[in-house]
Length: 92
Image 1 (cartoon, helix red, strand yellow):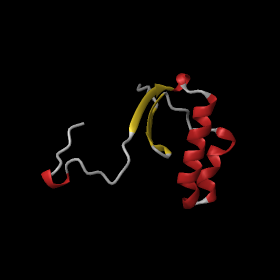
Image 2 (spheres, one colour; image 1 turned 90 degrees about the horizontal axis):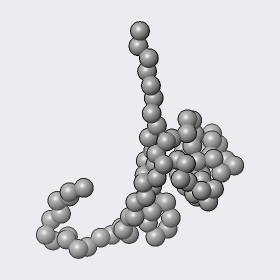
Image 3 (tube, rainbow, N blue to C red; image 1 turned 180 degrees about the vertical axis):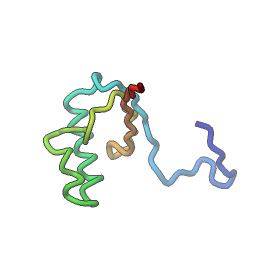
Image 4 (cartoon, rainbow, N blue to C red; image 1 turned 60 degrees about the vertical axis):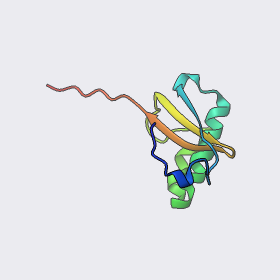
């Protein structure tokens, strides 16, 4: 990703650096699912108890299980999660 940073702030960061992991769903271990489910419960819990419920029992997906994930980690653990799943639409 190319970012434009003003000269006055170059080299100064208020945020910890993020390390990215791109992985297929089959590559995730149980420990990964546990860490992801904790992240989602903490993220969605404040918006309502119902929103965090799908992630109970170390489940790391709410609806359909994604095929590929991009997970960003900072010094505190998971900071960002992006997932994708394929959908096939039959026409005609």
